[in-house]
Image (cartoon, rainbow, N blue to C red; front, side):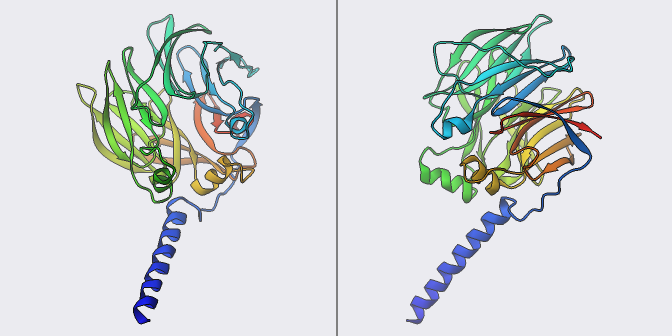
Length: 342
């Protein structure tokens, strides 16, 4: 009887330890203080504007939009890419994607300037089979080029071009089973990875806890990977053959999502300060989820510039500055928010 009670006590303590670890490691107990120094000056009606990227030299933004809440609730609709002239104060995005003969549900995007006249766009697409779609952008005209598919695209989240012929992408999960994914999400098991394509696909980083946003540093020497499950930004040195060597981790105290660079090479990230609140929101069990905007300067200085409990915006996933404005995209909200410092 004593052995049984002792075993039962150990099991109960282990369960309690697991619950406490899950709550503390996902930011559940963090207090969200609504930032007063920024005000919302515009709301652009786009459902699920999860990722965006800016050309500072040519003054425009490309937005990746997909109504994830509608798909979750059984009302799927095609996603789209939008072009926004940033030097116009009207904030009226123009749809630039069309019908390519396949379902289009865009997620992470990457833009690479090829010359003075045009850009390359890479877009993660979540149709029945995951893929990465390549486009070329001439002004505000988009031309479909190619679709990349491979078994290594287990759960692609974001993509970044190294050059015109090669790119990196993240898989935010390593397991495909429900049990395996639950273990990744709640036990914090690091099973996700980064894949490199240069004509062939190969894994170049692994053991990451929910590899999310990815980008390349201003000097093109490092790959930056968001690991929201660990509240970390991970730095990898790019080797000559495209492989990655892990350098260091930077604690940002929040579940960062996508990573954008400004004109000076500073990093800007939309973030989820409470991952459990975000999970409940994404599942449709909560109406709102908190948001945070984080800036990293010189690779070491972490600033939380904006926090909101979800009443102004829910589940911020990406942010990019332009002049005195901040453009903030979200995972499932109905609008893309424009902030200005008071």
